Amino acid sequence: MRVTVTLPIGPICAKCRFAMAYHPGICPECAQRRPLGYHSTVSSGLAVCASCAGEESVFACTSCGREDQPYSNRRCAGCVLAKRLTTLLTDPTTSRIHDRLQPLYDELAGAKRPQSVISWLLKPPATGNRLLGLMARGEMPISHDAFRGFPSDRSHTYLRDLLAGTGILPAYDASLERIERWLDDKLAPLDAEHAALISRYARWHVLHLLRQQSGGGAHISKGQADAARYKVTLGIRLANWAIEHGTTIATLTQPQLDLYFSDHPGGRAGQYGFISWLRRTGANRALRLTAPPSSLPIVDVSDEERWQQVDILLHDDTIRPYARIGGLFTLLFAQNLMDVCAMTTDQITVTDDGKVLVAFDTTPMGMPPILDTLIREHATRRVPSIASTSHGWLFPGRNPGRHLERENFRKELVAHGIHPARSRHAALFSLAGLLPAPVLADLIGIADKTATKWAMLAARDWSDYIAARTR
View 1 (tube, helix red, strand yellow):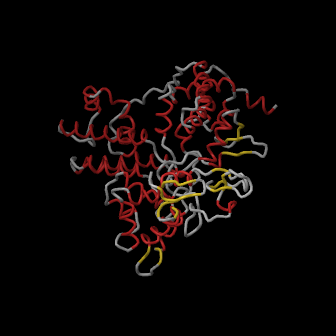
View 2 (cartoon, helix red, strand yellow):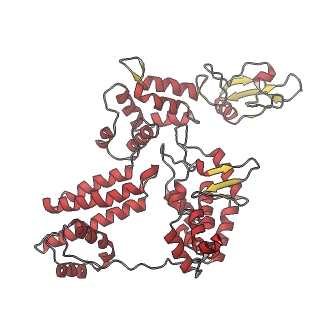
View 3 (cartoon, one colour):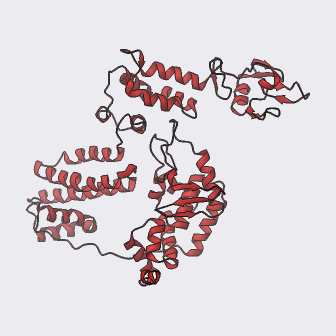
C-alpha cells in the first residue's frame, strides 16, 4: 500500500481516500454526511468530520471545498469538469463560451456525476469532445444538417441528442431519419417512374403516419420503424415484379395483381395499405384488395397466471425497479409499454399523506401498497444520462432528452417469464368485465371503440350504462 496521506485515524492510500470521500458517513457530532477521518475532541475514539475535529480536511477540493467528489490534484470532479468545458466551448473570437453552446455548458457543468461527463469527453473516439470544439471555434455549423453528413452511429447520435435535449437544436427523431436514409438506398436501384411513386407513398403516407405517432415529444419504437420499412419493402417488391413482367404499377391490372399474390401469398395483408393508397391517389384505380378481416383480441394468459406475475413484480428485488413499475402498470392497469416508456413526472402526484396517484389519462388513480413505494423510491433516485436533468421523463434513458425504450422494459420482463403484450390482454379482459367501457376508456387512456371491443370479448353488455348513470 502506497501511503498518500496520513489522517489522525491512520495512514491511507489514494484508493482508500477516494473510497472514504465517495462513501461518507454521518458525523456523530454535526449529523452531516461527510468523510469521517478525524478524532473527536469531545469523545475519545470517536471518528468525526474535519470541521468537528477542528482540522483542515484532506478530502476538500482546493477550489470549492467540496469533499464528496475528489478527482485529481486535490480538486473535485466538478471543478475539473468546469475548467475543461470552459476551455472546450470558448469562442476564440470573444474569449467567452460560445453563445449558442452556453445551455450545454450549464447542463453538463451541473451534472449529478461530473466524472461521467469527463469520461464521455475523453473516451475514444471522443466524438463529443472533437465536434464541440469545432462548433465553438466556428469550424462546424451548429445544425442538424451538419450531423446528416456523419454516420448515424451511437457517438454522433448521442451528441446530437444532447444538443437537442438542451434546446440548442430543434427536437428530432433519429429513427425517422434512419428510415429516410434507408429509403434513399432502397429506391436507388429502381427506375425513375417507380422510384418516384414509391417515394411518394413512403414519404407522404408511411412516414407521415410515423411523424404523427412521434408527435408530442414521443419517439417511434423499433417495432413501428420495422413495420414502416416492411410496408415500403412490399411496395418495392410489387414494383420489381411488375418490371419483370413487362408492366408498371400504374398500368398493373387486377388479374396481374392476382397473379402476383399467387407468387407471393404471404404479403396480401401487408399490401392492403399500398393498394388502397394507389386507389386513393389515382395512381392506379383498377386495383382492388379486400381488407384484412378484423378479429377480436386473443387472451391466452389466465387471470391466475396474471396475478402470479403481479406477485413476482411486487416482491422480486432482483428485477430492475423501472421494469417492476412498468410491468405492474401493464398487469394491473392494462397500460401499453410504449405509453409507459413516455410517461412524465407530471403524471405522478404524491399527496401530503404519502399516497401516490397516477394519471394514465385524465383521471388520477391511487396506487396499491408496494407499488406506491416503488414509484416514490424511483422518483427520488432516478438518474438520467450525463446531463443534469431528466427532461421530465419518469423513465429517463441514457441518451439526453430521451426516455427509456420499450425494449429495455420488455427484455427485463421476458427474462422473468412475463410477456407484456399477452399479459396486457389478460388485464384488459379482466378490467372490461368489471368496468363499463366509457369508464375503462377514461381511466386507462384507451379509445372508446377499443374499450367496447374488450367488453364484447368479456361478454359484458354495458349499453345501458350511460342511461343508468343519467337516472
